[in-house]
Amino acid sequence: MKFEIVVGSVLGASEYVAEAIKAQLEERKHQVVIHFEPNVDEVNFNNILIVVTSTHGAGDLPDNIQAFQSQLAKRTLNDIPFIVIGLGDSSYDTFCQGAITMEDTLLKGGARRLHPPIHIDVLHHPIPEDEAVIFMQKVLTTL
Image 1 (cartoon, rainbow, N blue to C red):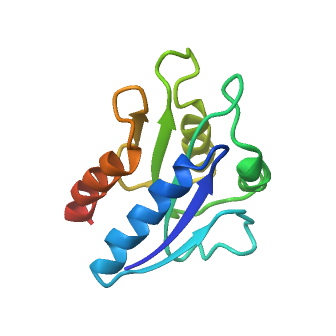
Image 2: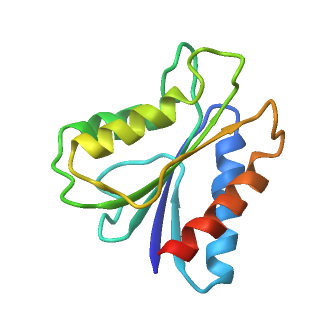
């Protein structure tokens, strides 16, 4: 299979998660491209889209993925398969709002969610990439 990983990150945790997932997928002989500064013109939507994002400020998307989300919101996404991995801190009432925003945008555009998202709480999982790899193991058994 082929995957496109789109990363929304402020402090780098989402980047670590994306790298861990990429390594996991490549071990299984899948093809993976990571987009740290995502642009809709550079993402191959014929592949499975994985969105890995944190939440910034008062429930906002990180700066590096805001334009991507805005571009997606204006498109018809015709059954594009996707998976969302959110990182957040449950002590905030906007826990994983960035991931929720991305999922809502994709669904409203007509994309197809392949698996319910995971919202990783960094208070309970200080190494979020470990949780993401376990999650992706489960997801891969369903694909």
